[in-house]
Amino acid sequence: MTDVGDRALTSSGRKKADVLMFGLRSIGNGQGGVEAHVDNLVQELDGLGLSILVATRSRFANQGGGRGKSTLFVPFWAPLGQNWEAVVHSVLVSIFALVQRPRIVHVHAIGPSLVVPFLRLAGLKVVTTHHGEDYNREKWGIIAAAALRLGEWCQAMFANARICVSSSLAKRLENRYGRHFEYIPNGVRPHSPSAQATELERFGLVPGEYVLTVSRLVPEKRHLDLIEAFSKLPPSRVRLALVGGSDHASSYADAVLARARQVSNVIMTGVLTGEALHQFYSHAGVFALPSSHEGLPIALLEAMSFGRNVIASAIAANLDVGLPAQNYHKVGDIADLSRKLAEALADGDAIKNGRDWAELLKMFNWPEVGRKTFSVYKSVNPSIGTGI
Image 1 (cartoon, helix red, strand yellow):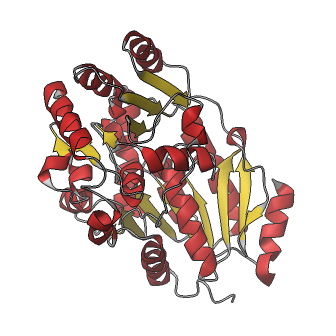
Image 2: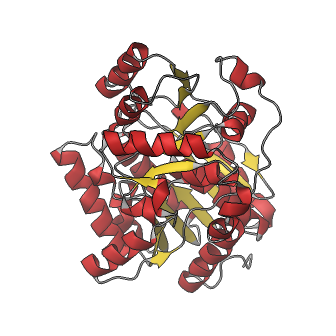
């Protein structure tokens, strides 16, 4: 950590970093939306000439090193476990921030935002991004949910500027706290579907003949709903591919695995990245996201960027994407989800190809996300990016 920190001090000849980011585990090999968001955001900010430090968690790779012209990863230890991992990591990074004195500290997610008052008290400029109401995730108990609500309050009351990835959530937060939340959504990059299908063959999948979902194995993603809805489809060659894994041992992940084994034509691939994931997106007959909680779903945007037909639950974050009514189902309604899957499979991807989604996806592009985020930074600290 010290070696990376020393190099960060001298990166691009500057005495301090423009931005220190934390609130994520790693970049480039994680499953989370925050990880994907930061991965893409730092690429844009690096291109705008900012020197960036990204604090990662040492158990999840990114063991130092850089990306781009002046972006460096700084690994910090954190305990393994969902209850204390984010809090301990945030405290350690905050102490590091007191030494480094970056022009902006950018805190991602509401759990890590518990340290925002401490950072402000230390005289640092703080920008936060609200990625979703994590206290509504089904995995959290009463105490953890209360701590997350407190983190949200700390964001609202103490940050110099606040960003939110969901337009409907930004409005709710403004009404709740009387503070402005700048709506800057997640983005997506254009994709050309792969002609290769070698990764599919490993799992016995045929292009166009499988339903795909990509997510962590956590309760709010409602994999069990999807398996039940799939089981009610008329017998066919179509299969269901569940891509993703669990960060920690959990009874929910065990339940998903057990049910997947009981229903024919359901496969669990584990975590896929890179070319393998590219091929899975490229050839899916339908992409499904039946979740009960989202911030702004990057996986859904990714599927759309590959020209896939998509079915998503009608929760506020998914509705913010602006899909036609036929592409939404009632959350938790197995019969409705099954019916929508059948209709989408019958339509095929030719009905909803890349050109059909192009207009919607214009609202979600990473270069614009980078420019808007840079503007927020400048409003908080005009010296950012000047090298002074």
